[in-house]
Image (cartoon, rainbow, N blue to C red; front, side, top):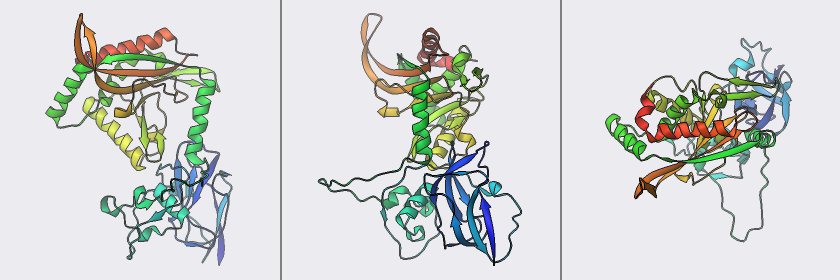
Length: 389
């Protein structure tokens, strides 16, 4: 018998440490090479780290919520013979970017016959913490995929005085820290403007009929925003606090704030000004669906230069979005609804939408912010101009 010491690899982008989210195997378990070993959180994503060898786990380093330095011993295995891996552990790391809060105790509908396990890392983690064998859970997703809803959370009684403590770890901790940092360091100011999207709605319905698509307002607004930012490069920028410089970008790398079962994520459409509306809509759908389903890569979740955020039909009348640092601007989309308005001295019913946006007042003046949103308003109220170069 021999022992093999596994050290934490660099999980990408110069990571110096990572946080333990959940061990997928425990000391004493016999684990096979490439089987899931542990979920580690970087400042970008939760990364599923597989076992580099087949053997019995002798020891592990770090409990959930604790950090482990890159290069530090992560686990020790007892193997049949001396192992000389042919590739680095880092190259073996899979990149499902599923993030979940610490989960409550769960139960599951169990099958008598073991089945091949198809489940996201978040679902696997919840099952692991609850001691559930996923191979015996009947999945309700496509192809028998086990979904979060297949792990049933028991409801507390109406008079229950019990409560549950959920550790704030992993990506949820990162989100909390970044939100606090954004509000603490960036002096936000909000600008709200109403937009008449009646013509845009007609155009949207016509194009959806002609092209047999189901485009929402999002790709139209995204395309209009990309055009407008050519005139307002100060809003398509990052503030590099370490060097005290503003980086203005030529291409628009558009972040799309996306609500997922595991929390808020911001997948990125690279160079959103490239291609036509169909291509833009397809890429928005690709990155947002990947984020929701836990398939987004680390590159899909970083590097945005400005963010669009929308709650769709739940968008309310006004919102005050928080900046996605190091960006200096975020554009919020509120719900579109029919309102009674006055047009040319006459009462009319029009489809109206508010744009609620926030800016970093250190680098974007109020005049420039208002001018940018007004330019966006003109594009959306004259939607045919969205397609003009």
